Length: 281
Image (cartoon, rainbow, N blue to C red):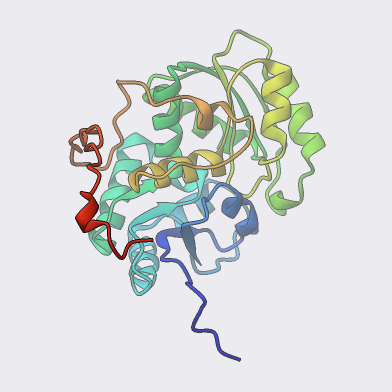
């Protein structure tokens, strides 16, 4: 079979993703990614610890992140995303910034974390008061509230499941029920935490019902990583993905300004003189 007529495969830009060892939602991440971008996913080494603040610290150690990022380097990603909410808020805002610096140094490309992406998304939407949903225990949920407080975000209401394992098995119904419980006060947006909690299909339903932007951990992670590429996350009826970027939004990664290219009117087409038209059909 001759395949010389095939034009492809098309070039793919790469997003490297470092996820905890128990991450089970690779397919969900892909749903936010446009066709010309590929994810290169790796996981931190297994440790026999349930979901907790201790686990969050273990899966976010700089040495662990550095090894994962260097492994991803062979596939030449243009940005690295650390896909774990608790692992990126457990050290507070300063710890989150240090993680980005460590990953950027190891991979020599821009880096983002889920918690940093959340703050970026809230700033983008102008949301300073949020309702909070998590699958975590109370102590982990409180740690997230402390992180948000340190960056100037107020939690108006919350709901959590108290889980320490198998978070990826939580059904959408449980997420919806928690969201309704959490939105008790006046909030600008709802955030659903944990990259191992399925959220893609539930976001449009909740936005329509609650009449506010709904953000989730995987959504903001992919949104922020793709912004570093100048690309757009895809997803129907999700407020974060529909709004044009406001003038005040500035990604953390340093981006060079792009000069607009002027669009000039086409040159008028001159007809050939009769003596030069001979032989043309």
